[in-house]
Length: 236
Ligand code: ADP
Image 1 (cartoon, rainbow, N blue to C red):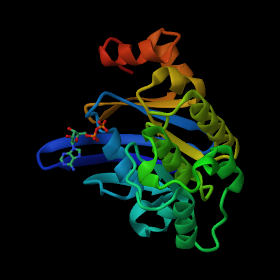
Image 2 (image 1 turned 30 degrees about the vertical axis):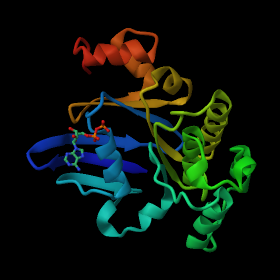
Image 3 (image 1 turned 180 degrees about the vertical axis):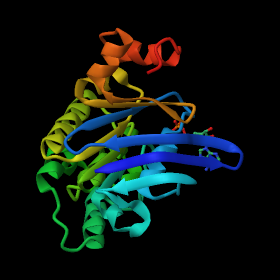
Image 4 (image 1 turned 90 degrees about the vertical axis):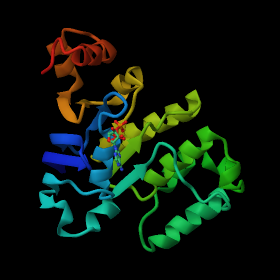
């Protein structure tokens, strides 16, 4: 569904992405991992159309990204530190989002399953960090988008909320959606991700099924596998 071919991006003289080629497949969850500063956020921004590549091609269902901006409506995104309208109550925020997309079907069951009704009347600005994250995640899922991009979605979530998110993700995968999750919590990623894309210094050092990474690095868990990639012992 989404493919990047030889994508490059620099900010001034700082080369941030150096020829990244990556395919995100429907019905699979891809974990985007890499050290701080490796280019993960930049890669996400390019996919969201918030920044433009200097070189390379980005295709959505085979159509170049910049042919029209319509593809963006098919992506649900939850940023890591969501900026939300603090003065609105949770219920008002969802009412506003619905009003922005008249006619678009809302995933009501998801709204219920995220347990947001408990804080429906609370001002967003008064929510705890974990609740804000929960809210941002729910906003990403709201219109059942074909593509979900979540940046550190479990950060700050309690185990119950984290479990609810994981089941929502599994359902989204079963529905054939394309899912990209940036995370540092590798033990968690290996629980539900199918593929891993490992960025280091702006280059993709590995992209493919987690099992292949484990096999190629001779490890049984994601954490030592990524450590092996980082140490340069088994760069594939
Ligand atoms: P990550 O999300 O993996 O931590 P980022 O994509 O945020 O990495 O950043 C990669 C590199 O690009 C960093 O060195 C960062 O300082 C630089 N960078 C990111 N955005 C900008 C920007 N708007 N202007 C200048 N440099 C940037």
